[in-house]
Length: 116
Image 1 (cartoon, rainbow, N blue to C red):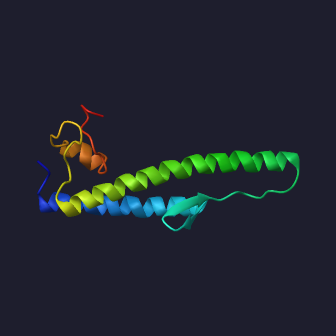
Image 2 (cartoon, rainbow, N blue to C red):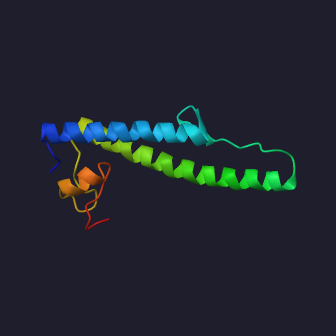
């Protein structure tokens, strides 16, 4: 059964919105927004072979980080939608409530500790 405590849900929503804002800021430093997606920025250090190698290395790192941040952003948006629909806080595997302690630390959790 999803949580219905309005105070708890309001706190979780606030946490999720703050995390989402922070993720957007972090993504903005390494990627450009294009539609609903982000595209990692390819750096330009120069034309030497060493500079080109560094560009590729930095781009690869940024691309990996961008994908991880976008995944976190998706998880947060899913959690916010669950709060909105009254479905927040239950484990998608065992269908039991996710412990509030877990949700306080990881508000976008979709599984309980036992199932994760």
